[in-house]
Image (cartoon, rainbow, N blue to C red):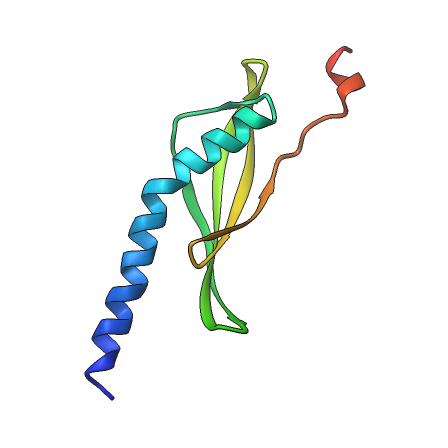
Length: 101
């Protein structure tokens, strides 16, 4: 049983590294689909927790990133991943009529 622990640890690290390379791409695509500009091409790990799901224990990671509306100002929001799956994206976008004011 102790021989499996290093393998499990390596598997978890592999998942973190693989998702770290895809996160800026996922965030940039999400921002583009909402018509905002993804800034700095970077993300920061904000929170790391463990969650039980049907398939077993998964890492739930929350990443913070910056974006801009129409090139003005800087806003900060987050992306949530569970394992290697994108769970949610939070963008605090104003209502369309508020952009015109």
